[in-house]
Length: 80
Image 1 (cartoon, helix red, strand yellow):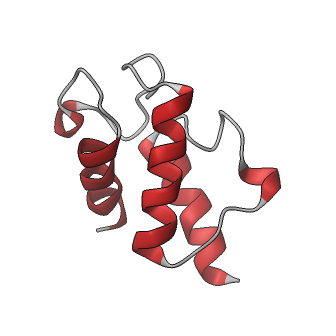
Image 2 (tube, helix red, strand yellow; image 1 turned 135 degrees about the vertical axis):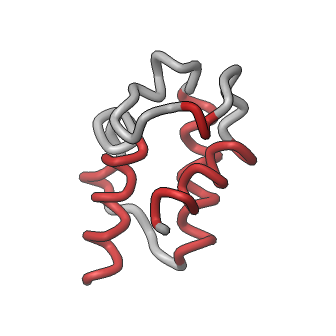
């Protein structure tokens, strides 16, 4: 379910040149066309959707690298 929500946000805000439903959860989103600008858009959309705020320490390429890394970060923030 979490990965589905992330994929929906990616498809709406990521402006990726590929269909996000075809990407594996571990696929490198940057190799798939994610840019620094769209990363900010995705971050804001995730924060709004899940009512969370990314900590400064999470604002790295590694956090936004894949659907799985985003899911891990979101789960960590939802637990706090």
